[in-house]
Amino acid sequence: MRYEPINNTLFTTNRQRLAGLLKPKSLAIFNANDIMPTNADGTMGFRQNNDLFYLTGVDQEETILVLFPDHPDERFREVLFLRETSELIAIWEGHKLTKAEAEQTSGIAQRSIYWTSQFELIFKQMVFEAERVYLNTNEHTRAEVTVQTRDARFIDWFRQQFPLHTLERVAPLMHHLRAIKLPQEVELLNRAIHITDTMFRRLLRFVKPGVWEYEIEAEMMHEFLRHRSRGAAYTPIIASGANACVLHYIDNSAQCQDGDVILLDIGAEYANYNADMTRSIPVNGRFTPRQRAVYDAVLRVMREATQMLRPGNLWDEYHREVGKIMESELIGLGLLDKNEVAKQDPEAPLYKKYFMHGTSHFLGLDVHDVGNKYRRFEPGMVFTCEPGIYIREEGLGIRLENNILITEDGNLDLMAQIPVEADEIETLMNA
Image 1 (cartoon, helix red, strand yellow):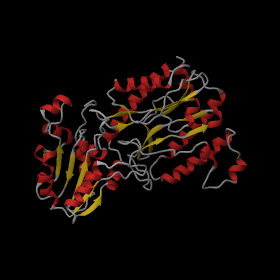
Image 2 (spheres, rainbow, N blue to C red):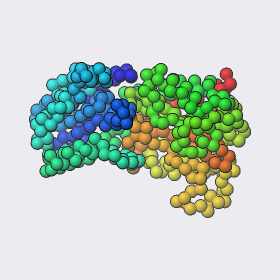
Image 3 (spheres, rainbow, N blue to C red):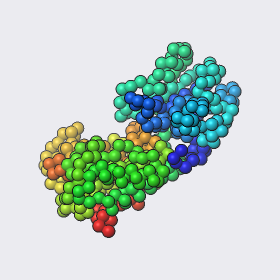
């Protein structure tokens, strides 16, 4: 385990919260993600199913969790199945969790921990006592699933084996729970953010005209790994000059030219929790007057948008208001004409030519974390705030992004300590 152990009270609490949402006599099942092979004897990097990690803290392949809160036998109220190790596995792959270690990690008693090979035998002692079975699928609104997942295969198996059970969707319940971060989760997010902060300060000292985007990426990864992060929370965007106008630019292969601005969309992962930060910095350490004007406009939008991330507000209303603020800034920059704006189609606002993406998304175990946009903002929710202006004809793209925790009386900027003011950026780059 690269990260420090997490107190298992987090996972015990999460299971209790889910149990409180299940209907009576219900059973819920969670499977680990698949391990994807390469074309030889290797595998792609394993990433645990976030719902399973949220409920157990177990970060190991072939794990299964079954919850049945009101089963008559206490042993079967929460059951964990683990991949059993062997001398061969230990030689080739390394250590796997023992039952004692799994208890320490998850808070599930050893008497309720079995090997995956025992799943069907134990499961049959549970499932016939259930009236409803909650199964899991990826219901993220932005998901594009093109291969059959372990969850999908399990659903097919379950329907063949137990066709008369009533099936329920557990994803809406998990989306409801995961949208509100508990204090321990905020601590883990803060750890990822602190690592991101140290990385960014390193880059401010490193970037100079002539450096290549991939060299910046190498500096980023060095700083992440040396602080116990497994690496970037997502494929990093290191986009200099006109590349910054490509929203999902990930080639990171160009040489940074004197006079250009680099857009850095980079965040660390820590214990499966993710930071998501964007900064835009001048290659030579000084913004031109035009670059500074655009930069300050984006920063003003971010400041005003942040103030609207507070309890009671709604996603769509929030984004409409941010659009109006951006509209005003684009008029001030000479990019939009106020008379044309007055005549625009409200369903196709003109500002989208220069600001074509949303301002915020949920953040947590997923970078674009699960949540319901029709649910009013509540304390404990964490959002990004990331306005941007992209002027393709000028080869200039600027985006700024911080991570914001909703609190009882407003919000807390979790990235307030990370340099963002243009003067501070210039000072640090020229120190």
